[in-house]
Picture 1: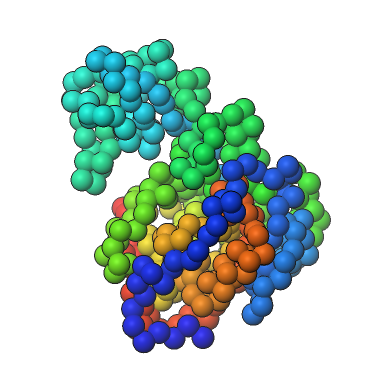
Picture 2: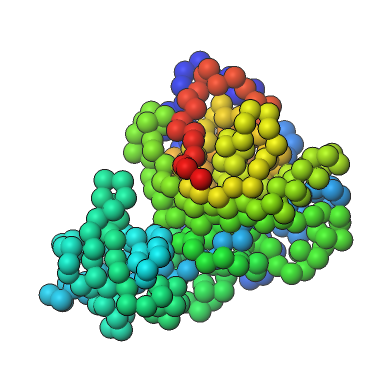
Length: 369
């Protein structure tokens, strides 16, 4: 059991990771990764191709169908100073919100030239504590990014993006552009795996959550309840809500493919009246899931391995139990699993909910619809 006699602190979610276990490239085949089965009390080493046998006919896999955009732009100011932009969100009217890195921040009204191809006007600062820049581009941002941008690989991947990254840092069912980071648990799926799951009687549904750069934002406070999450846009449609209801009625399980899918589903559940059925919804979520959170929708979670001291490690600890998850991570390190976005996967089931008296709830909540 994970009964605690003190609140969880940041140190409770730390672990030692040899740098060589951080995957710099994807597996040769999407479904060729390893799978750590943590659904029982003891870890079991498997291959990702074993997944259909670990699920049951009537289970429902819910995927995040967001599409990663080429959100990283390289440019320079009129003075010649280098600028690197990471587009966080595309807005109406050819405008975007972006993180900018430069020796000196550009002023409102100034212009930045990107990829030696187009100029962007700096409209001002935006976001929490002015962390983002509001830019106006001369054309459709998605079109410009596709033509001149780079794949926004995570900071722990040390090589420049390649043609291979443009394909492999994207799920095979990516449909709705807007993410600046991939829903990495879904990167393991290929057409053969989807066919095998269908033959097993496992159904599929989709939602959208546009993953933001804040997914890599470190937790800088020891008291994790003081951490404030970034906000991300999500949408869950009527077809997916109906599929979840039908799965529940038939006694099947809801399997979230990745933490982004789980965050969207549990955000939607928090918006429903107490005890009410899940409803279609769209909007912003800044949900922060820590041990003590009561899960309302997801029964099984397929996920990659997450950074030490990260909000996502806190989420999986909340889902399957802190002691259990940290033991799985120790096993994964000892067994030389590959970590993070291009790494291996782990299968978890929901642990019995414990009273949240020994651990903070964190900033659980969601933005306006």
